[in-house]
Image 1 (cartoon, helix red, strand yellow):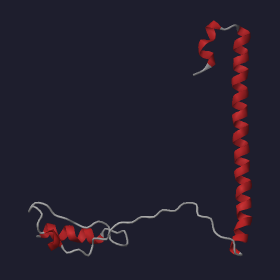
Image 2: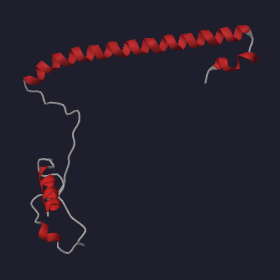
Image 3: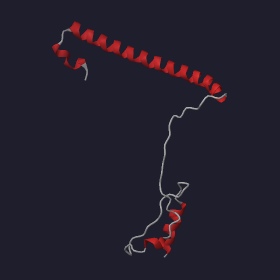
Image 4: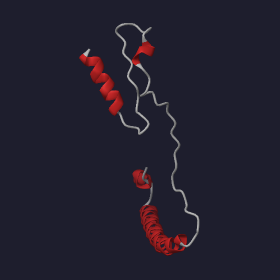
Length: 113
């Protein structure tokens, strides 16, 4: 939405005022962006100085952490699924190392049978 969209209903002085307001808002936004960038640079410099202090015994800060829990079914025997329909095959998911090597081997063995 632009205040200049309804310029026909406004007088020329009002249009100039609206243009001036828009220019002021743009300048303020640019100044805010510059201040944020300067603040980030200062934080980075402080972070470098704090990094030296952290080595001396301060506790590290965790920025992001996740806990993932999934049953490792790579060691299950296929015979435990004998009561499934004959056209259904079960392969394990990712193994303990979150790799799919075991599942790929199981799928290859099923395909070769």
